[in-house]
Length: 306
Image (tube, rainbow, N blue to C red):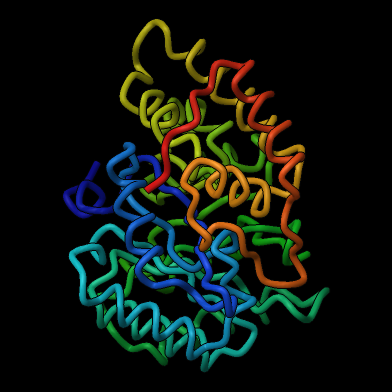
């Protein structure tokens, strides 16, 4: 591992939820508290304003305002900020703001509205973003999430971006849900940080030379994920991973954002956790109780939320 790689983020990252106030705006105080709690629970970092954070339901001004507030804390060095938008100027503004506050990197979805676009088009979107940001400090992580974007970030395209922007295009979040796809990317690009998009693939990612995971359900499974990361070379790692994967699968049976928010509301009593932005719909209390009982039966002692 090179010195530059050693300085880059590694480990377990929560794709953090965003608590909302009664007007469905980001509750800044609750966001900061949740991020601190996740770090205390064992996370190595936070993916801020990603898919799980409902970022694409927020306006540009709301996202910039939250980043300004985070910039007033000691958290930015632990943050990788989701900045990918359909409009390149919006992606550029958010990426510049992430750099301004001192975030460790940016996670960039491809422009996802138009489908069936070519590799040349996707390359141009990333290239224009990087060049318009125009800052050598930029550390960009490609966000590969074909279920949401219906776009495939193939090996040829990734390799082309790495070659054109070495030291800037430094990694990728692979949320394909396909271990074959994740492992192919790790194998194809040594020194390029391919994070698994689910903690279900944390152990095989580490064994293959990857840096860790960036995952939604780490919002509730941070201690278990951190234990796999800490003990991945140990004899009992497979059993730890099997338990973690089973918990992840249970959480994934319901829409994950409303489900996790309902469980955090149940644990904390905080009103900010009861809200989701349309088109998402909140879980009812009975669903949350059944899910909590199922997780408890699997040995998960739900933590008291921040």
